[in-house]
Each structure stands twice: as C-alpha cells, then as structure tokens.
Image (cartoon, rainbow, N blue to C red; front, side, top):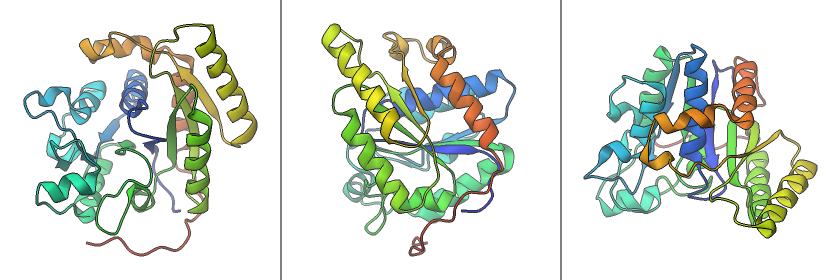
Length: 259
C-alpha cells in the first residue's frame, strides 16, 4: 500500500460494537491537540430521517467541528437498517465507489488526518460485487478494528484480523470496547480473559477496553469529554500520529472497483 498522509479506517467485528463512539472520541482527542481532522462515513444505513442530527455521520462531524457538507461526509444515506447493498437495492439506488473516492479525496485535500468509519463488518456487501474490505483497500488507510470486550469477542476479533491479513491490509490496532456496563463479577472475569487472550494471540496493539458512558447518547458531543481522557483513546491517538506518512505493505492484487 502506498504512502498516505495520516488517519485510519475504522471497522468493527460486527455491527453495534461502538465504531462511532471510538471514532468520535479519537477525533475529539486529535482536535483538542490542534490537528486538522476530517471524518467520513461513506455509507450509513438506518438513517434517522426525522432526526438527522442523531445520525452517525452528524455525530462524527460534531465531534471534530467539521464544516464540510454532510453530503461529502456521508455520500450515501439510507433509512432501511440493512447492509449497504441491501439498503441501496431497496431504495432503487446504486452505490458507486467512485463517488466515495471523490468525496474522500476532496476531504483529504483539506484535512491531513482522515478518519473513515465503515458500516458493519469487513465483508458486508457495499455493491453487487464489492464488500467493505474492498473499500478499505481502495482508500489506502491502515485499519483500526473495534471489537467487544466481553464474551464472544475473541472469535470475532480473530476472524476479522485473519481476513485483513489475508488481503495484506495494514492493521493499526485492535480496540476493545464495552458495549454495556459491567454488571457483576462474572462479566468482569469474562472481559479480563478476553483481553488477556487477545493480547497473547493477535500480534497487533490491543487497546482498551474503552469505558462505557451511560449518558453519551443524550449529551453529544459534550458527553465525549470523559471519553477523550480514556487511556485507550490516548494511546490510539498517539498511534495515529506516529503512524502517519509511513509506507505500508502493498495489498494483494485485486480487481479494480467499479466506477
């Protein structure tokens, strides 16, 4: 993969693992240190038509104070809570990766640090012939994988990382996130075991778990402030800054994405 200016593509081991929370917390941390940060959510499904300010894309814009139009931050928005290709087909729309690439290039010209959040996991269909992992290759950003810190997190994380490695996509780190408050000793022991075993096996930095913020959804973006003090976000921010402008391994040959 060629040289890039900085940033990462944030993907998840599954839907609902906290990609937007981690991306927003990271953006807020970087902006607080006076870095010019651009954000992008190329495709968002389950778009809250009646309250667009609660969409993932709008929340990412708010987290870094971005003034770019929402149409550039999120070129494709669908109300159906489906995989991108399924939502586009239901809306009688075709997702064109060339549109996403142009929007990304326009933002990149203004913001040397780009944070791009995917939809769902790495193999979710984006078009009839491509998946999210193809888009990752095309945007040439290292990948941050966000996964759950509790029971089930090990298998999901290992499968995702193995698939990324098979495509020779640079992996920045694995970020573990608490998707709910720990309610007892059993859940805490499960989390400790998940973190320990992943650190032993994955071969990339394992960060977190990120703290669970109960009021974040009601106080965005001010609710992000406690998150930016989280040690995992601090470490992730430093990784992003030190990783910029490095030359990464070239991905395996693949078909050119359709125009």
